[in-house]
Length: 162
Image 1: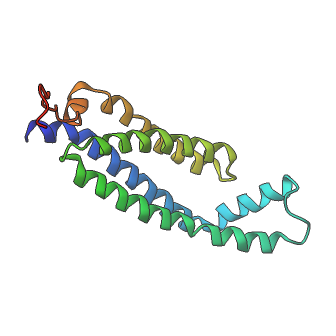
Image 2: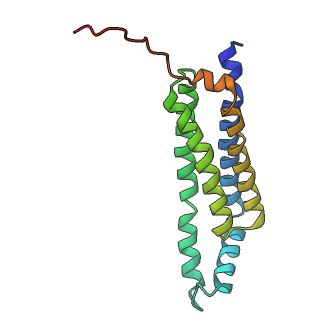
Image 3: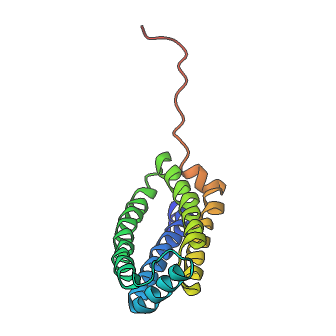
């Protein structure tokens, strides 16, 4: 294994773990779809967000939104596969994008945990996923990783060719 592969391996592993957790959460959501929907509808009724007699309609809307998850997992999987393919190139843009994914992804998951109406087990899995994304940050801050993504030094121009 080369030094570059050894340096980038933890990043690749964490990206794939994150996708794996997303896929697991998607599968669990559809396996326990009825209980997840029951939980959501019950909490919306208790919060006064659903008028009496509108529970079935609300459930139908919530059921439709469950399809957003597999589509977002597909998009994230494609983006992560592209990250992995571009890691070895050492492009600075890729480094900044990884930082953005780690920071904004973890922030988005924290936001979803707070505002979403999902069962506790669902939020716990999202929390684990957020921790996986946050664990990218110290790895991205290591000297070896920063050096890999450092811009190429430019030659100093001593005189003008004009």
